Amino acid sequence: MNNLIFVALGGSIGAVFRYLISIFMIQVFGSSFPFGTLMVNVIGSFLMGVIYALGEASQVSPEIKALVGVGLLGALTTFSTFSNETLLLMQQGAWLKAFTNIALNLCLCLFMVYLGQQLVFSRI
Image (cartoon, rainbow, N blue to C red):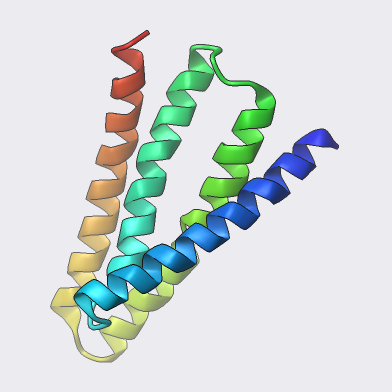
């Protein structure tokens, strides 16, 4: 039951961060490409790699895993928004933007998980 509280707390923080990052990215880059979703997914992927690696090294408590790994990162990152925005680009005929969005989300997020893990594993 305690972990549920940590998940809820992390989720509320992650949701606020997601909103603020998305608004910031729209202000900087405009709304013609879903940079906000890309950014939260990239940041979240890096942090997931860090949390995973710390957990593997037994340096993160179950409560922190629940707070950050499930709650915060679960609310921060979003596959459903990525999917919807990509489909909207396709429906608008913006095929290059749609496939760029797919490629960037996939490649950058996988790389960031790897980078986060390597950062931690190299220091342990």
